[in-house]
Image 1: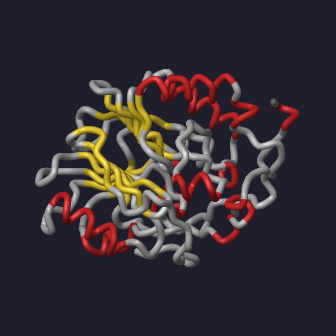
Image 2: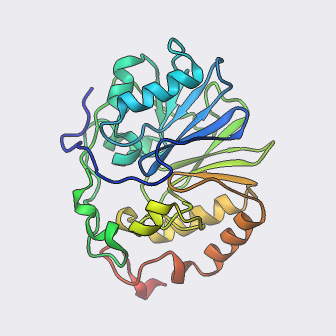
Amino acid sequence: MEQSSDNRLIPMTSFDSGKLREVAPDVAYYTNQIVNIVMIGMPGNSWVLIDAGMPKSGNEILKMLAERFGANNPPAAIILTHGHFDHVGSIVALLEKWNVPVYAHPMEFPYLTGERAYPEPDTSVQGGILAKISSLYPNEPVDITQALTILPADGTLPTLPDWKWIHVPGHTPGQIALFRERDRILISADAIITVRQDSLYRVLMQKEEVCGPPVYLTTDWDAAYESVKRLAALGPNTIIAGHGTAMQGEDLREGLDHLITHWNEVAVPDHGKWVNRDDL
């Protein structure tokens, strides 16, 4: 197994970095610099990890997980929402510690087997300073072929019978979200995020707002819009996004309505290599 050839420490953080927060007794998320890692399962019991954080964060993540679940209690599985650098940045370090399966959508496999690199981030896109410096972000693929397993085609999740996965392309071809019907918790990955990810100030402060996917890495805006509508139709009570703090209740519902109603104005950038305003 190999981490990407351009895997490197990214000097970006937020005031929430290092915080672990629960949204339910068996669902918690941890902010690793600017990205969220999600854990499903009661402390001390069987559990599942969603995503693998930023580059060079393996020791930090392992320490946090050992404190929550026990030093000798590896996850039953790792589920990857997609393969961007900030969601798989420490996957090899985790797999060197644990011999566990990693589930992903088959359309993400080329980026997880070393076969294909994602397109380079779009530094020309309309957005703030974090969009302009996005050329610094790794885009080469990891190779975790030995651990990879395709998600069940029926939408179920191994070891998580109450949850289902949903294909939400746009940001990447094989991005997925996770949803639990009984309490309507949605793990939205980067299909819906709750901080304006191209703004340095908003990322640093974790200023809460319902947003579309990060502009500098989203390659299909039509698909991204359909994915947001699909997730909003689930009527989530709580969203844990890939970036930003968890949101709940009326603020979440109003934010989703505004995002969908004003998509072209608030989500789609005015210009960029993946933007065609003639189609809007």
